[in-house]
Image (cartoon, rainbow, N blue to C red; front, side):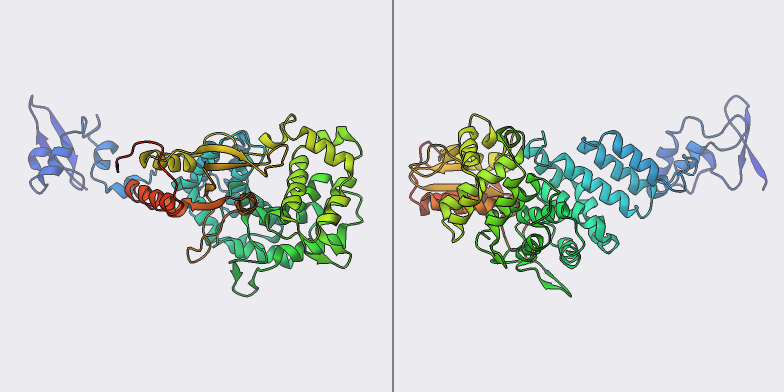
Length: 471
């Protein structure tokens, strides 16, 4: 409405809106902190006598400041722009997380396609061919915004379409992130739609389950409210794979080799179909795509999957042992054996770079005065070359391993498929294996971690090799 005049030093008169903020001399109703805050505003009014925006904003509640009415107006459908921005740096985890953050700022309820694209991009970044270290993946999983992303997907998992399930499942396996809240929905769709999956997709689903150590025949498993427990899921999918696609001519050796490796990880050597043992059929099918040594040498991860499966069969002696060895041509066995170390097949198949969890365990061992061998190769006494590395090895027969896989519902600890297979191998070699879970380990302070190490070592009569604060 009207205005009131206020005379300031120098005889200059300025107009103040009655409804707006008043000058300091007239602000009797303000608190001391409000007056001090007003004094920080350099120009409370403009040249035309109206209060400046900065002056008005100084009185706003902090929450109101988060909304900028003068800011850039978001597009009606920001999804195409977000997808385009995501594809600009698809191998940068920080950029991918930034795209998710922008999506949450632009949309009150981010589009489900953007959420899945961000998770799948992160899974691709840390797939088996990744150049990122294990520590990078561990730090990403511990990052708050990554947990927000997974939380949004858990809340809206009903919107994940069946055709998107294999990609999300593969991303979780690459990240080694076993979300017990989301996986039942994905596994139920994978089982229900098994008649519709292409061969390559079905092979990848089986491998993802093997990495996450779910759907096996023994131990604790996930369950669905309507579909029930997922016990035997991998066996059902593998038998269905052989029934449908064993005579198929398309596909690749990699597809079937990853299935064989998944069966070895989950200790499913002796499952059967109408044609007999499944594992020899899968091995034979994978080998049928490789015609000569050059193709085998250029097959990448197929070499690792085949030789580790063959070695595990030789160590664990399942009922299908003879048939598995007969299913792989002798020249192929020989080449894999000769190039296992010189061809860097083994080294390429191991986690590379720093491992924060392993280094944390090593720090606790040093604080308590114990010193073992770090990343030491192990095997049978008569092996010409080793196929496995122990994380921490102590004489005469103790191996301490670290596993980063999330527990199941109810905080039930269950290792990853890789760690499960590794533990079995180490026990076959004569070692006692102690597996520490990162989620439980991170809850301890350094004193409790040291106490856990001392309990483990004293229980196995391991002697200290150095001084510790307890000496």
